[in-house]
Length: 83
Image 1: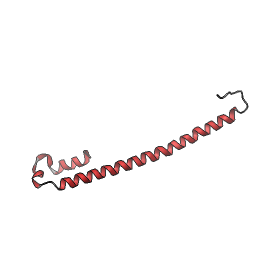
Image 2 (image 1 turned 90 degrees about the vertical axis):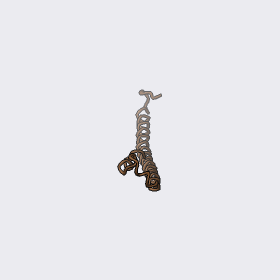
Image 3 (image 1 turned 180 degrees about the vertical axis):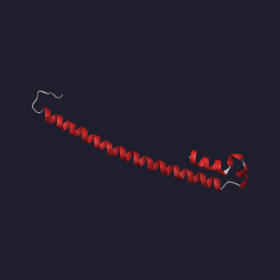
Image 4 (image 1 turned 30 degrees about the vertical axis):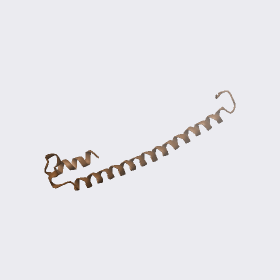
């Protein structure tokens, strides 16, 4: 424990303050990289799901597009919301 009456008290306080500062800087960089890479993975995953869904829609028979729930607007909404 730190005792304020000791002669090396300020030296220990300065060293511990430096450690806390370095931990804070390390956390800043690690959180920045974490959020960057997580958003990159999410973007790539969403893009691949949308591409797969679009390929599936394009392979559907013509009669499938005649249904009211499969209008171009509804399909575009599904691509943007469901993926």
